[in-house]
Amino acid sequence: MGEKTIQCGNLIGGKWEQRGATGITRRNPANVRDVVATAPDSSAEDARRAIEAAAEAFQRWRRMIPPERGKIVLRAAQLLESRLEEVAQLLTREEGKIVSDSRGEVKRGIDIMEYAAGMGRRLGGQTFPTETPNVFCFTTRQPIGPVAAISPWNFPVAIPCWKIAPALVCGNTVVCKPSPLTPATATRVVEIFEEAGLPPGVLNLVHGGAQAGSELINHPLIRGISFTGSTKVGMAIHMAAARRLAKVQLEMGGKNPQIILRDADLKNAIDCLVPAAFGSTGQRCSATSRAIVERPVSKDVMALLLEKTKMIRVGPGDRPEVTMGPLVDETRLRDVKSFVDRARAEGAKVVIGGSEPEGLRDGYFYAPTVVANVRPEHEIAREEVFGPVLSVIEVDDLEEALGVANAVEYGLCASIFTRDIGRAFAFIDRIEAGMIHVNRPGLGGFSHMPFGGFKHSSFGAREVGDDTINFYTDIKSVYIQET
Ligand code: NAD
Image (tube, rainbow, N blue to C red; front, side, top):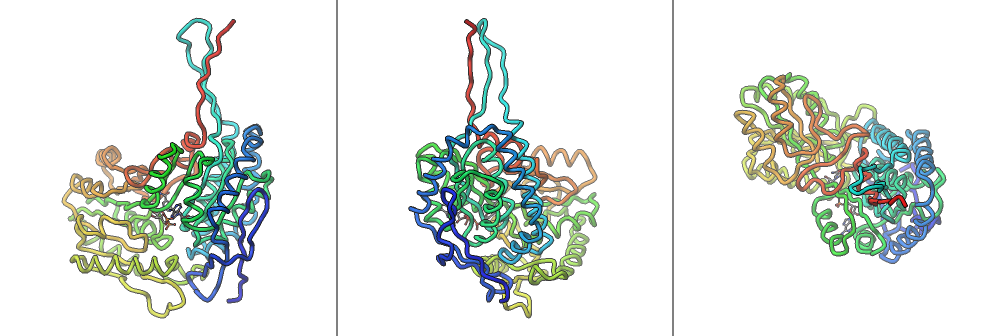
């Protein structure tokens, strides 16, 4: 045990409440005896009060000039930077990823907040030529109103930051509902925004699950819902929001391919593939989960892949020698195990991993796993596993590789390894994915580039970068007649 349990409360209208409530109990996934946090499992009524507080604060907040709103967000970024190590350690304790990944995640949150702060000086419209004499025409952007930010557990710092920061700079007020698996890190993020000088009610926090979430989705005062999580929940949110025409921005699952062609630098391809597949224990929407390899190099690829996978050290994420932490909870561990069992039953072959490592019984550990003999129609080749499991699929040429890569419902990230610029451009043109990498790890991207995908991976304006302004604002077209 040793470390203290953090008592998380809700922030509603500038007041922290229900600290000490134990509806949610979160344990360290690397050591289940360590109770990291407790938090309220908020009711629909709690969510309603938070929504009303956000609606009340909205009229004042929208009138603050945008550069001033940006300055508060910049201050929050600076505060987060000054606490980077503390927040990273907490993130590892609560979510399980290794500390270097946690530091990277917090840094990403800070970078995105800095970029969003500058939106306060970029929230411009456009001017247009007139169609009739003596009319001056322009567009101007306005906030949409109170918004809900519903986030998952796998990036519990960066994702709330990349929703809250642009929402606020664009002039909206926010109700956050983090995952019940990561209440402590979410609370730290909201505390930091509050400390940066937000007026009461501008940012609210309600812990809980579907009960609080459902109120946020259905309440008429919430004008926009920015959701990151599973495709199943995202689709349900989209349907509910459509009934009252609320705006939605949905970031959901992935089944991301890395194509390795026969002319690739194979060492680079594997050096990029292994961290993309097993980093954060494969629990990233952007994780590479399919290696699609041209047959002439498949033996060499497999040898290099196994050599590098063997070097991964599984264990608690706060130990310096460890390079892969646990899964987030028992349910995830059970799901991953059953995906691998079904892959075996369908005729695929587990060539490394496929079990819980010896001597690690205090948490939810699973070995990095490579599955060969996978065919595109196998479940393991189509469904999001969300764990450290990589499928290897062999193909004859780029044409077949593209067919396999695109034959899934998802379309988030994709990468290709080749020295042939023509084939790289054919891939960029034809791959059905929103974030594309050539000769580099097929993960997310930079803190100022749009983040999102095609098909069942995303819906609505992209997050991160300036595209997210299109979600957090509405446009007014203005015509002024000279008299
Ligand atoms: P999840 O869909 O179970 O939950 C996400 C959030 O929605 C949580 O806060 C949860 O409490 C809330 N929620 C659940 N049911 C709800 C309901 N009926 N109404 C309102 N809110 C509800 O997802 P998860 O397990 O937390 O996260 C893992 C998933 O997130 C994976 O599928 C992963 O691919 C996806 N993800 C996507 C991205 C992206 O940017 N595309 C990033 C990270 C994670």
